[in-house]
Length: 333
Image 1 (tube, rainbow, N blue to C red):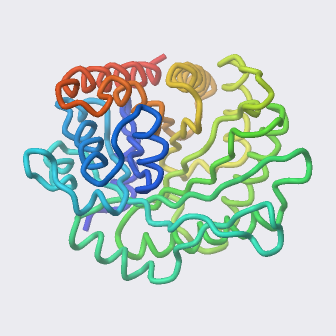
Image 2 (image 1 turned 45 degrees about the vertical axis):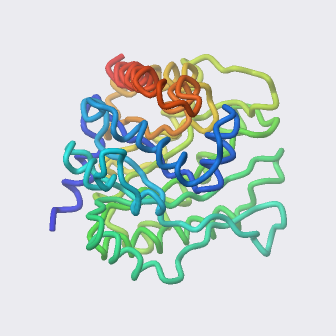
């Protein structure tokens, strides 16, 4: 078995990042295919994944790909199981292991993430059958004025992230912990900064309380940006200043790497913000590598070009590689 710290560090290798391709079947249909008029269903979900994962040369820009369970059972158009295809390219296959959200009994407007029941058995199967090297669990943080999030919801989600992380390390994989601060809302950037500080501060403390090995966990975090409903687009420099200051205040130097989610930002916005954060992190000698783990911001242009038509696949792959190159170059800013 590989040393978990080695796997974690390989996932945040310089100049490369992680593709989040772990949309549930419903999200793949409703958020990826439907907006572009592409026929919904399992075969087009497979083609959509093949479009990305079988693109030649992605290994120049990607260290890992987070997959959804359906994808573990699917094959490329050439007939190669997707996990095998990634391993052949030197890319670590990862798997989303949470099972979505459920209402938080103590606060009706908030959610907690489920999936701990039966988790050890599932993890064993993923490692043995599909040779996955890392996993992801997403919690959702909703901001509404000073009312939400509640300290109780932040703590309960942190506790579940810690329990998940411990099981994943026992199974011989690297856990990625993702408390996503939703972009939806009318909150200011300053409020987002406060919430991220509380969320990450709580999470890091709870991970340590549960004896999670902090040298073998990847943090996937939101950037600090104004709520979408404010109509305000923050400058990349503002985003970088606030995001990096939160990370420096809350994340121990032991953590082998931090990856950013795009969280509904446009491809150009997410790329520009990543470049500014990366530049500032170098100036301030941040103790951990920073990179990307984008979903929509990497995929959207390629899906738009593909539009569900086989003849468009080569051009769609060119668009995908072009975006990967831009995002990779942002890390060298």
